[in-house]
Image (cartoon, rainbow, N blue to C red; front, side, top):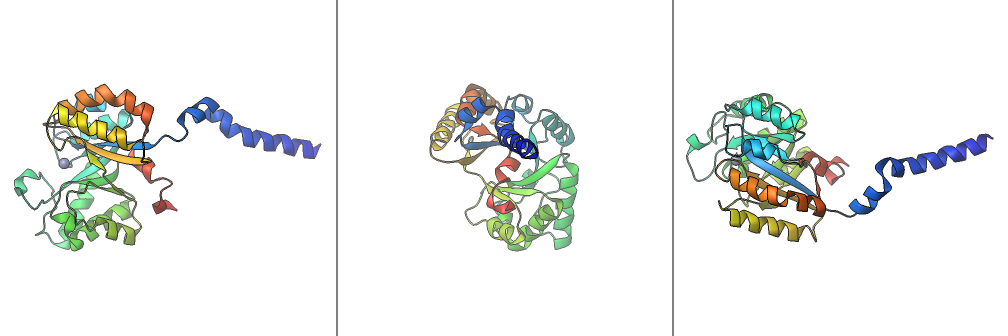
Amino acid sequence: MKRLLFISLLVHIMLFPLMSKGSFAQVDEGGKPSLSIVIDDLGNHMNGTEDILNLQAKLTVAIMPFMPSTTADANAAFEKGHEVIVHMPMEPKVGKKSWLGPGAITADLSDEEIRKRVEDAIENVPHAVGMNHHMGSKITEDKRIMQIVLEVCAERGLYYLDSKTTGKSVIPEIAEELHLPYLENNLFFDDTYSVSHIEKQTQRLENRLKTENRLIAIGHVGVSGPMMVTVLNRHIEHLKEKAHIIPLSEQIEGSEWLR
Ligand SMILES: [Zn+2]
């Protein structure tokens, strides 16, 4: 009797996960690649924000700290089921410091001031579980500064997305030393501001989904925001057929970083 019970329990345990997920879903979804769509530059009432947040897919939205709609955008995104990350402004090689907005990381800051600015930014963006940078081609090549930025992320349990605004980023090396979960951008939707370019990039993304298992693509609100909305509205259902659209944190789960 005991043995029978054991067998029936065993059968139940073996079958239950399949049944609970739904076997059709497993057959349909098996082998689909993962895609994360990241939208940068929220937090300043930027064009396209509301429509982006209304898209029927789990996006990751990068919100700038200390801006007029930082809190409102973070809360709205979270309530609609999107993932929130801090869009940390960092000094670029070319461009004015004034473009960066408040609380930015610049190369002239002391170690203490950098740490304080990163901590304050994380506290200023509700629901944030990760970070990427706004601009930052100068800072992300700077070991002293990125060491501090990434240490704070590690202490606070945030992952880091390198949008790769420079070819000489020190982020991978430092993240590895710190065992910080770290991801890289694969494609920008809107590096040129036109619907036809964003369409072309989306087509490129779809082609890459045929051969690559995990992809991360970044777009923006602001000047290109309404164009992003137009193209994503046109293609989101199709992209959902081709890939699992998941937030960045789910790309990390099961990656080598957490093993
Ligand atoms: Zn940005």
